[in-house]
Image (tube, rainbow, N blue to C red; front, top):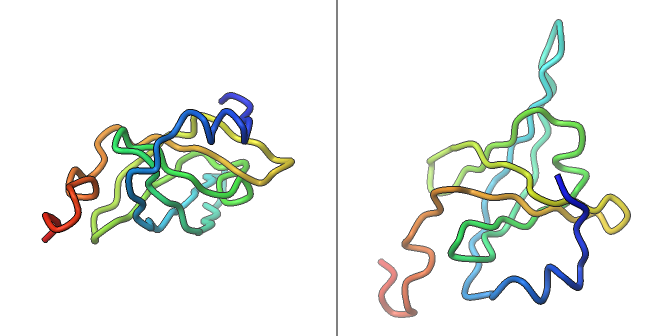
Length: 104
């Protein structure tokens, strides 16, 4: 996972629209699993999800839930000092990015 620069993030993403997603970060231990939750925002039609670093820190698996559908996402960059992280959903919901007035 790479170090995330806020300046690079701002210049690299086009905020076409944003949708709030529920995140579940799971750390699986020998005897038990620890589950953390938080929110994230889809910030690109390519499936980038912006969240806080503390939500995904030290977890083994991250899931995103939107519209009752839960799936795995992967972290691609994180910055603990600024408490920000960028995740990637390889199959983002296409209906998030339809032109205004076309969303049903």
